[in-house]
Length: 236
Image (tube, rainbow, N blue to C red; front, side, top):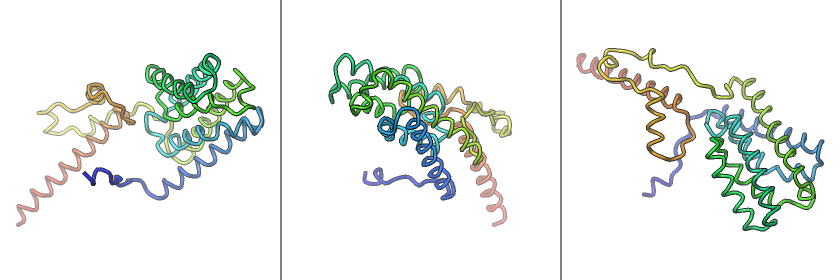
C-alpha cells in the first residue's frame, strides 16, 4: 500500500523540464503584464494565481486534453460568468466562492472544457480585492484578456520550441503496425479506446489517439522482444 504513494517515474528529459519552465514563466509574465497595461497592476496581479496554474498545463503538459485552447478559453469564460453572477446574487463570501467553483466545474464538464485552474479562478473572482470588485462585469474582459494572452504565448512558444500545439487529431498508426497477428485479431483503434474511457466514467487527461499510438508502440516492442527471445533460444 505504501508503494502506491510513491511518485511514478517522469519519462521526460531535463531539457523538456527547462523548456516548459521557461515557457511557463514567460507566458505568465507577459499575460499579467498585458492585463496590467490595460486594467492596472492591482487588478492584473489578482489573476496571477489562476494564470500561473494554467501556464503549467499549457507549457508542461500541452498534449493533454485539459490544456487545449477550448479548455482554457471556455473554462475561463464559464468561471468568470458564474463567479460574477454568484457574487452579485449571494455576495462575496467564502460559501458563495465555493458554490461558484462547484457550479463552474459542472458547467465546464458539460461544455467539454475541463480546466482545473478555472475552479480557483471562480473563487478568486468572488473573493476579489476592492479594486477588482469595483469593476463589476468589467472583470470579464480582464479574465478573457489574460486567458487569450496566455494562449497566444503557448501557441507561439510551444511551436517555436518544436512542441506541436494545439494537439490535433493524429493520423492513426494502425496501418503502420499491420502484420500477421493483425490479420487474425482486430486492431484497437482510437474509437475503441474512446468507448472504453466512456465506460470507465472517470476523467483522464489523455486523448484516445495518443493512447492508440502508445498501445501500438508497446505492441511493436513486445513483438521485437518476443522475436529476440526466440532467436536467442535457437542460438542456445
